[in-house]
Image (tube, rainbow, N blue to C red):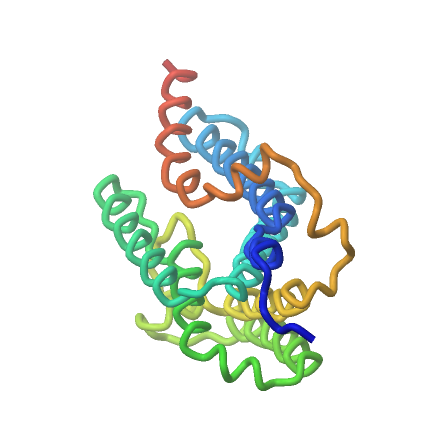
Length: 240
């Protein structure tokens, strides 16, 4: 059998899975809507139930989980996950600086989380690859459950563990995604990414296209950076 890869086969391997971009795009849109409602409540004195209600209490962590899982899946396809993680963390640190200047600090938001997770996975991915996939899934689920319980129910008096989820009195971050339990959510995405990469999903998953959502998903970082200034400007116009 000829083991050489034809140009056609090479292009197929490099082809993006657009449904992943589309799902990421949809999650980003939900994030923008969530932030817009927050801005209306914060700056326009809109009713608080627009932002704080049982529906969003469920949807917000759900769509955040989808976004983080998709980033974990994509990490299986990256040839430079450490560089991507370092770049993302650099952008996140810059955002921290800007938000501190306007007195709305984002100390450890979703970009900080993803940057750290990518660096962590980039350094340790060979270890995870050796773990049987069913065991990896059990580890991720157990990690999510146990770390969530510990953060919520075990009080630790320290000013140095906020990165893991233990906030001290006076800690403020307008976007906050600590490592516990979100690191395990990311790792569950890397587990799922193995099956995506090995073509274990139905054929439609690799062929489906939703152009608008895919475009937003491909540019999710840009959307994240610019959406809040645009929303803030929109809120000022509405309140003017």
